[in-house]
Image (tube, rainbow over all chains, first blue to last red):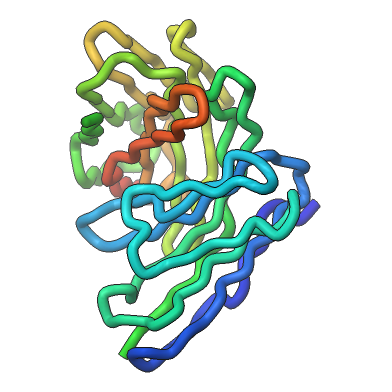
Length: 116
Length: 114
C-alpha cells in the first residue's frame, strides 16, 4: 500500500519555465490537496479537490493550476515559474464526510522545487 | 480568521522525560484537530485526530487532549525517546459544507537527547 506518491522529489527550474507536479493516492480517498511549506510561513493550501471533477482555490493559488484527472490523481502545474515559487510542495489526501470534516490527512513525501 | 499558535517553538529534553506540547486556536467552531509529526525532509504523518465532540485521544505513548471552549489542545508524550525527535504540528479544521479550511500551526521542534 503506497499511500500518497509524489513525483518528482527534486526539481530545479529557470524563471519562466513550466512544469507539472504529479500526485497519486491509492487509498480511495475522495479529497486531495496541494500545500506549499516555506520557512517561517508554515503550510499553506494552494488548491484542493473535494471530489473527482471539482477543484477550488486555497490560500495561495496565484501562479498555479490544477487538474483532478480521476479519483486517484491530482496534478499541480506551474505555467511560468517565478523565484517566489521556490518551496517544498506537498500533496495530501483524505476522506471527507458529507458533513465536511476530514478523517486523517495523509501526505506525500514532498517535492523540493528551486526556481532560479 | 483562524490562527493557530504552537508553544514552544523548540524544545530539548533528556531521554525518558514526559513532555507536553501546546496548541492554541482562536476560533473554537472546529470540526476536529489533528496532531502531525514531520521528520526532516519528509512529509507529515498524522498521529492523532480528535473530533470536536471528544476530549482526548490516545495512541501508545501519545495522548492528545482538546478543550474547545478555551481553544487549546495538548500533546503529551510519555517516556520520550531519541526517535521522537521531530517537528510536531497541530492543525484545526473549520471546514463547512464544500468550503475547506484547515489551518496549521508552525510547529514545535522537539529534540530528545540520549
